[in-house]
Image 1 (tube, one colour):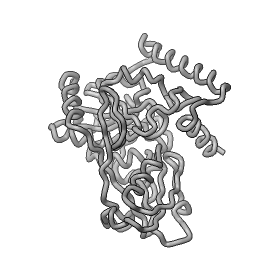
Image 2 (tube, helix red, strand yellow; image 1 turned 45 degrees about the vertical axis):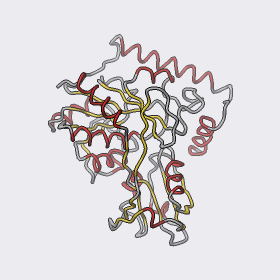
Image 3 (cartoon, one colour; image 1 turned 90 degrees about the vertical axis):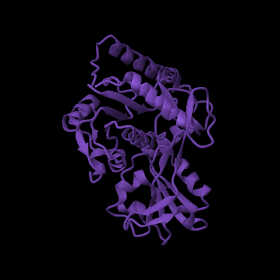
Image 4 (tube, helix red, strand yellow; image 1 turned 180 degrees about the horizontal axis):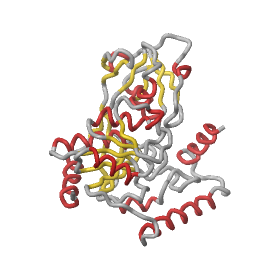
Length: 334
């Protein structure tokens, strides 16, 4: 029932031009509530904490995945190349709720800390801490590691944590959908919020850019076997019949990438952050199963021998890198 409702809402947000009139008053109430919330933070009614190092928030203003995690991975690599010591904090969405922040490693249980956090710990090679209270997560990270920059994966709307740089990621295919706020549309905040952030990144190779936006696309041409660690070029699967599985914000992006590579896939889309069971990976044939790296961290204990995942890396223009470090130089503290 929940999944059907989510599919219906997604279709209304991204495929239909109009929504039922009974939903619109709810969106108006939602917008009033978030404006009041921001006002209460601004006047100090709600507490907002500043950490003693530079904080970079990578987020979005729409529900669902837009490509934040690969961008965070890329940013940590760029920072380390320039001699910074980054750390990452995250909500740990999809993991067990906890009032206390938790450190994350590549071997952490995704059911406890969330799939994205485990992926970040494996790919970033820097400290990662999850927690609903992001200031507390940042303090725990700093208490145990000599970081001088903290990147918050998501958290654009988490105003309890003050930030020095805000980066928004937009899905280049779906952008803002019908342009309405929840629940009539996919927006977490009104679209005007984009004008207040420092940088806007658009995820998608063929996306049309607007003024001031930076293009980002994924590079990934090597599949890895989830059981053995064997690597194979994605091109080796061209023309083969496979199953493709994805539980991400926009599964169609992953399926399109495989189709573009010439792989003949039967696609299986699941809700974002879906908690896979062994039965979800079992089909009545011996065709290879391909999945995203984010899904792989949840399936490695029960995946079959013919299960593969596709690691991807974010590629960004030099202009983005230059502007990011220009901002960092002017706002860096700690």
